[in-house]
Image (tube, rainbow over all chains, first blue to last red; front, side, top):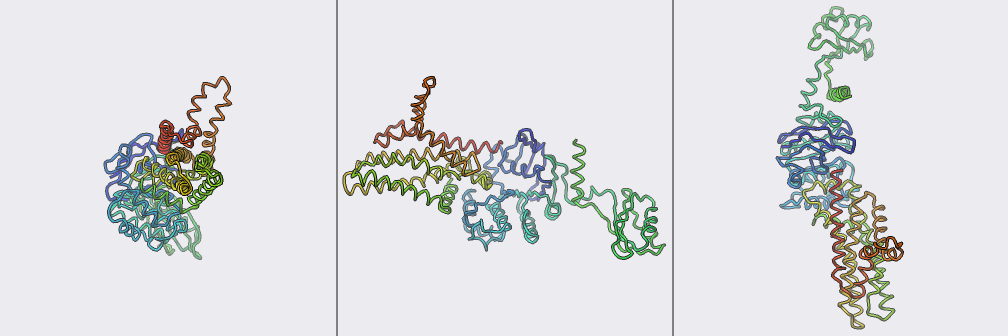
Length: 315
Length: 236
């Protein structure tokens, strides 16, 4: 559905994008993940025809966005980072304007109402946009992108500035949109991408550093097994016992969680499972094991690791 | 184009700009009408039209200042530039909105002529020539203002910039007369560019096709340049 090849964007000396390549399949929700200034917005702006690329190609449904921008734009609904809202219009007037601007056909009021219901803005339909809360503004922006039901939706940080309840609502909405649209959404919140997206592209300093499903991404990265254990017993002796387990790479006493109960971080050689051995040794000394959980890497760790690794390699 | 035109037209009347523009124009055109026609017992409206030149110089920048600068500042240009429309359509819509409001203002002069015709015979050809002249002048001024508005994201800079350029164009004749001798070869060029010179023909009842073409060409050139500045943003 979307093909991006070797996209480069140069601002004078500064390279905002250094050869970005990825593709999105029909009906997929792609998460675009990266720190601020990584090039997420630039990539999206190029896809939507707001900016041009210095070199490289971007096609939407087989249409090159540079060669036939108008045809490509017809296929895209875009919610920029700051929703493009005219403060002096009511929601209704604004959506009518967008409807006319996009040159859509069919019953206008019917389609407007359908979109308004979809993003739940019917109750503010006749209010001036400048008087709306941030959450409503964001939804009006989303309504604007959804008008005409374009096959591709590009959403730049759609949940930024919303309260937790609204975030969940918008995420659910995006997930339901993924059934009928191809969606690219950008975010620097990893749990969001994990919750919503089928696939994640991690971008840093204008380069793609990873491209995988969220689960596999966190899975493949967590090759080293790490555990958190809560053990009741004298901490120095417990520590000695744990540290003496074969193939234990590192054991660390973290803190006393309850009276007499200490938490330890354990790290073993990759591919080793020490859980049974740990239980046996503790049971032998009658030290109850009150909790044991594997601290698999979260996407946060993955992300930090990917981007810092790249930085080390790049310099 | 239609959508942009309707939205800008609405925006003029959502804010005070449309009302202020019309009120100030009506105030001054009424004042000049009173001075040159009613109190002077004359049906010659040329004085009204030639005086309106100065008023337009102040008012047109007000009309055009936020057309493009505000879009850039509020980032609403992202909706316009990512919509499946051509930049020419966007610019034309904005231009026409300002132009129509301007025409609404100028329409008041027709009323004045009708009032005069009650008392005495009015030279309609001259009046119509005058109206065509001021419409052409306003058209050119609006295109310049729109172009300046596209260069900045600050309304005030857009207004002051347009005003300065319109003032310069008005002072062109004065500039020609003080040109040092080694620059005198510029005089014929600058004379040709004088808005005042081009416009005063109309106010004297002379319809010169080259003057009309001058204003139409200025409009076309500046609208084209406006489209190019928007285009250039993509490549920045």
